[in-house]
Length: 201
Image (cartoon, rainbow, N blue to C red):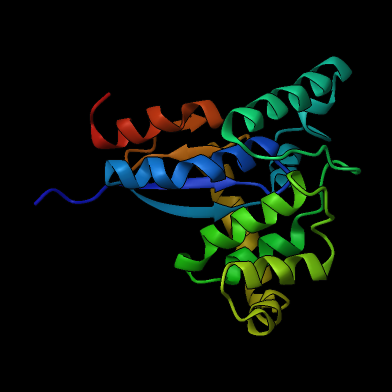
């Protein structure tokens, strides 16, 4: 029996393209028989590692406008509401720590709930109430999850995960990394990454 390939899905809560990818990646992977490992990380730390003070998408106003319009178009095609956040980049630190603290099977639903709060409803995901609601939507007992997220163990785990992203060459989000170490960056590379993992490239 052929072993099921495992693909790492690296995402950042402030990334609108990670939001789009999180909506699409689950069914795509399931249809192909690929197992996903959802890996939140801190993209700001990756930017700093690479000598950048902020996202390249925010460096040029025309590119920023294009990004938001592009995400809006894609949401329309996917049947999703969309709102440009009032403040951007988003502060996803707390949500990232909670995601790391969750068991693997709970992480996808929580992640999608956080993204929808941010990019569909325009809510501030730095607010504890928003994170709590996302946990409830994911069917997770929110009090233990929030308590775990504030421990030094989880804080260090998120730092280590971010360091691991850098070590693998991840420079943006979303990024998929296949078992052989191949990187695929962007919401438009999901299918290609999954097919590569299956050896059907």
